[in-house]
Amino acid sequence: MRRPTPRTRVAATATAAVLLMLLSACSTPTDARPRPTAPGPDGDGVRRPAAGAVFDYQLGGAYRPAGDVEAVSRDRGAEPVPGLYNICYVNAFQAQPGDAVAWWRTKHPDLLLRGHDGELVVDEDWDEPLFDLSSDGKRRSLLGVVGPWIDGCAERGFHAVEPDNLDSYTRSDGLLTEADAVAFARLLADRAHARGLAIAQKNTTQLLDRHGDIGFDFAVVEECARYDECSGFTRAYDGRVFDVEYEKEDFAAACRTWPRLSVVLRDRDVRPAGEPGHVRATC
Image (cartoon, rainbow, N blue to C red; front, side, top):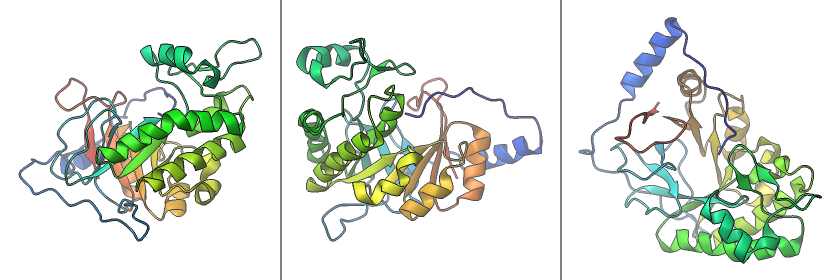
């Protein structure tokens, strides 16, 4: 996930009026319409998403997609949606917080990154310990855990995998390098392609120029309008970009400026439909 940023208020100006019109025009349709069909596989057997597909981002909990949705991203523990393009979320570069950390400490303590003081190196924003990608041996041992997660995505019928926290090396206190991240990402891409899955680059503009070398097929980005990153991802992936915006003004800017992209407005907690605070709109 993108690092948390402060929320901002939408000013009561003409811009706000435009946003309200946009949101009204993008109101959630009913499920009465027939669902679109997911794209077929390319020549190598991998199904890559279509540019501009209507998208939903359901990491906070799975729910029935609206009738216009063509592609959806869900956690690897959820089920894919028949007839849609399904993206499987995997936290591939950091450990999930809570019980998962205890599991890693018990089963694979040597694969958690430790600082010079012997303590775990933790992403403080999400309370997630970083994986140790610092050697080929460590990376291949990690693949022994993460690889079966990717296999499970394929076995349950997902079309693609979204490995999160590619940029964990930037939070490693200098213990990991860009080369470490690229090497592990390449192992993940090879594993995904071997199972017929496309693989997404998640954020991390620093590695855009390495996307072909790694083997990424498309991108899932958060707040590319806010951070002025949409153009770079659009060029790199020829429009095969799913962009999640969390602020209404950024959503409006993305819809206006990059109409080729698949843009969705979500609440920051990506709550399921029906829960208080749930937000979803598309261009």
